[in-house]
Amino acid sequence: MRFNNDVFVEKLVVKHLTAKDKICRVLYVILAVLAILIVNIFPLFFGIGYLFLFTGAISFGIGYLCYYKVSGLRKEFEYSVVNDEFTIDTIKGKKRRTQLFSGSIRDFEMVAKLKDERHPVSEFEKPNYLRGRCVSGINKDEEWYVATSMGSQKVLLYIEPDESMLQVFFRFNPRNTMYRPQGKPMGTVTAKPRVNPKAKPEEKSEEKTEEKKED
Image (cartoon, rainbow, N blue to C red; front, side, top):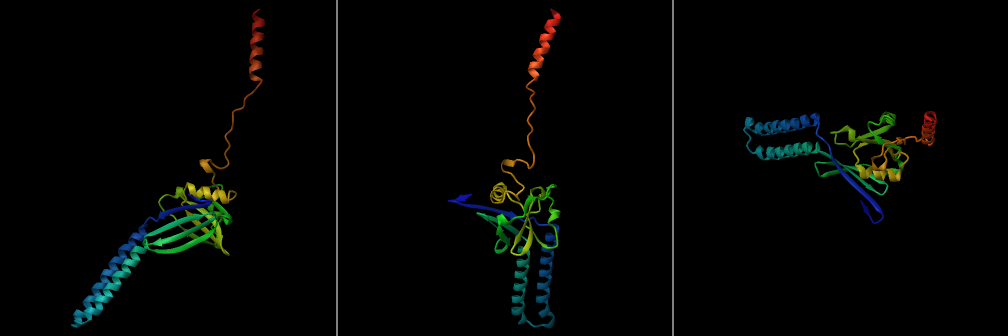
């Protein structure tokens, strides 16, 4: 999308809940229920009824903490490009927003598909690179990686850009973006069939020799 002379592209990626996330969600709920039961049963053993006001407030706090943890497991990643500036924000529970990355596309060292054998991601999976997985985790065929830097820190990002975003990457950094518009694969040339201009005259000469033999 363009507004006047500015380029603006945005995409929202919802992180798929893994088995670990689902187990954590169940554990948070079970622990919260057990904690609320223990807090409220405690005054009954000692016959202290007025503590129920206090334990009620504690129960509300435990419930809110459980909700905070469970909703935090739902993550969304918002990619946005304004001209040559690329940013990624993490959104937890559809409310809490944190900026994960911000930098210039011109500073990208490499943009390639995660499964690109000609430009393997292993070249950048080094200890000095800070990694950030900003993908849904559903389809690895749609995942790309971006090797860049944020200040003095080397960064390796895993993202799921769409066609319009890749076009912007190519526009501002064509040398290091392993993508070509219109879906043309990298490094392939359509070979044209060779045409031998002497083929037809030779055929004619062969026909003439055959006619002479017949005469």
